[in-house]
Amino acid sequence: MLNPEFLVSDEAALRDLFPQTHAVAIAKSLTHIDQHVRDFIARSPFVCIGTQAADGTADVSPRGDPCGFVKVLDERTLLIPDRPGNNRLDTLSNIVSNPSVGLLFMIPGYDETMRVNGMAHVTRDPKLLAVQEREPRVAIVVTVAEVFIHCAKAFRRSKLWDPEALQDRSEMPSLIKIVLDQTSGAPEDAAEQKKLDDDLEESYRRSLY
Image 1: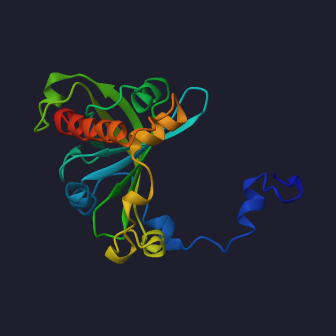
Image 2: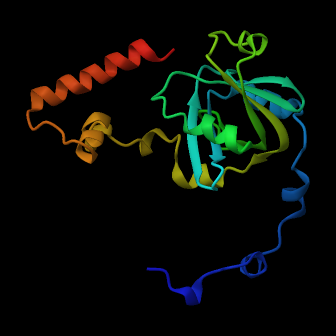
């Protein structure tokens, strides 16, 4: 339960709790894609896209493909292909109603990330879709408003890439079991559950593209 006595309700009160922003942290924010940003994005096989619906509800969705799947069209424009998923279309429908987006690019083994904020649109322009090695149904075009590299502290604290910090996936149920437990109920029979897990792996193999 939140105690209203300790709620921080305005930006001035928030900033009073922290040291002043370092000048470099402000100066590093660019309004265009320079060579360093271009090189970082070219190496990234994974990006998270933050969006908001028209009513302000937020969502973050992962996107992954081989390195360089996000194309830099020019110093202010990125192109992100859409890939087959569950067809909830959370990200795409949010962009249609509210074009503001935030992107977080990651590179395996890099503790730094690249942050991009801007305005996005969904396109089915054949000329833009053809830029991709595997042509998508639609793509997201992002007009960059702000871009900057983010320091390594979060990844250092989390040990995200440290092999010794890897967790055993078998310590939690499979995706299918979790979803069924949360909805209609998972089967009690272990063999039936294994078949469902195997079917999911097969669907991954068949439907990545």
